[in-house]
Image (cartoon, rainbow, N blue to C red):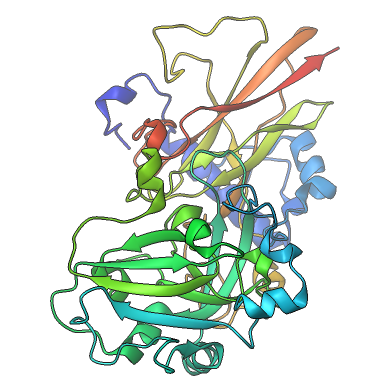
Length: 425
């Protein structure tokens, strides 16, 4: 594919032969029943690339056992106002704060009183309850594979299966109407809710109509088969398929319709881009094996998709050029994206039924899966002299743009290329 970004001139592109070889390797892997079954010799089909025997041996062992469904880690540091986090409260205080399934309620109102025929509010005695959302979930279950990552961070806070109801199904209970221009989501957190309230927002088109390739905006009740706890942002949180963590409001308790067009997200106050979706980013690489030397790691598949991951190894004391802010001149080489494991559907908590982006038998409609994690690995590196080195990693999106391009702006997601250091003896 030609390089569509003039700023990316000189970035190594993947040849058709390399792409064909990678796809054949992936096909052989699936056919033989696992990552470790990749053949070491060249496939018989013309154009296929040989699999290095040392790499095949590594993938056959524990290194080939990859984890896609991870425990929720989250980021607790951005709870404001009070040092006590929601999950540190007593059962009595959790209940009083509306952070249990039995006590949670949701207000759906408009700021001018004109955009809803049936506003729902706790003060009026008709707030939406957890049972209402659960009923809608049972009627039309929504299940999404998604990685949550904070804006600017180089590691995920969670990756797995989110389950709940489409937000629009819940909002129709309030019968929206008229000139709606923005919908805001407020998460109320203990103890001083005026200080700890968190806000994100979306245009009505994103809430009520799904763009191609994107799942419905969700009110989530479960993560990886478990009911959401306060640590996970529960009992109910917003999940927006393509966005960074700050859009996925925790402990959502109030939704406000407005005619005002401006975004009301809290991140605006600190100068962040609150509209752009998640970038495709290679996370911190690691040394997977010392002899022969292998690098690999995770990559977040963002809005622009993923073509490959590249790596570059340089001496630790080599200065980076001031005239090359995107590090295009490093000795980049192609790594290999690892294919979906044959047992991927079986590993999904609760099974693969009704999961967005999967076929009826649980096979991913495309791989890597958008807004999810993928894994990559390098071929063996055998030509390094003893010394200390840095290994960089960068993702290349489907348009051929190499990270941090095409959006190398700090306020719009992580920009810096991640690296690890190691010593070669």
